[in-house]
Length: 411
Ligand code: FAD
Image 1 (cartoon, rainbow, N blue to C red):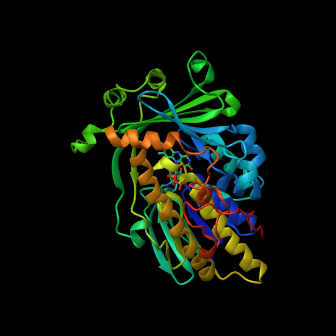
Image 2: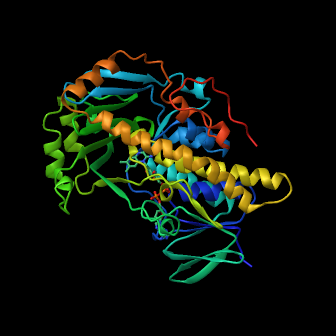
Image 3: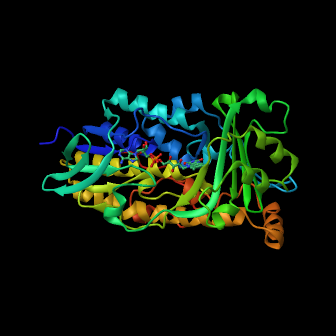
């Protein structure tokens, strides 16, 4: 007999979200994390209304709002001439979507989930790297340096290089040849610069883009510089180095170039995603978060999708428990019926989004002209993302079609 109902492998945002959601439904959950401490590396994170709505249902929105910033607009500018191309007015996002758009330091969101897991009684274990999975009669066994432990259900939340995913799919991470540099710095360092402390601003340019937004109630400022690496395209191993960063932004406007010296230069993130797969479940083993659907980050939905995964699975589990008994196979099937298709749409749209942002020459000018004329209150291209998370395939909204939004059913 296992002493837990669910083992979660990986204690990132996705793993902790799953652990919290299932514990709130009354299950006993253990998280196995390979790192010696729970934590997040990186800087800012945008969390759209489809995520904050779920955080509110878990009782975490107040804490998240106290740590983050509610931006007024998502502004898109041209990285070469610095002009505004378009914006999305977020001031009425709460009214339209029932929940706000928030930017937050990654460690603050992770810390909020971690504290909530501790309060809820999740068993949180560090220094355990899972190396293999075995299907057994009463569930799934995970293998690690300490031996082998069995649970009725195992959720693999172990990220892009998931050890569990090869059991389900033989695909490999796909390199986009793009690199991200990040930097979250005290806001005083940008006080004399031409930056916005109330908006998320993205400068889109030829094979590059640059993102800026405030963090921690305006005490910090976050920047992300993303560019295509010539060394990656040439097949060299040491791609994404700081000399490439500087070269990639040579022809950008003053505001962008002023921000570059403030980036962290000792680490960078190579941008990989994977081909979408339409099955995430094998027996009682299920993939979740980046293990299931690592995106290119251009829609800012990677962590958001991980949190949605956790909510959807836990809602199905909760509905079963409320109906008198937990049928894990049915709950996992319900999860598998709805999440892969939604995430497939996000992954493929994120790739297309990146291509649109990084256009050059004539196509870039045509894009700019079109964007300059769009209505800043047109939400049709984000309604399918920011609206209520679907629990079943028939609730999944069509893409890019304006829909009357209804608030999600709470169970
Ligand atoms: P991970 O964060 O990768 O966590 C996996 C965890 O599993 C880690 O703690 C790891 O140590 C552990 N682990 C791995 N292997 C094992 C093992 N064998 N045994 C035990 N433990 C293991 N998303 C957004 O929603 N909004 C954004 O604005 C946004 N911006 C981004 C910007 C950039 C530059 C990048 C690169 C990504 C961005 N994302 C964004 C995406 C987001 O960061 C990820 O999608 C999200 O963090 C995935 O969380 P996860 O928990 O599934 O995986």
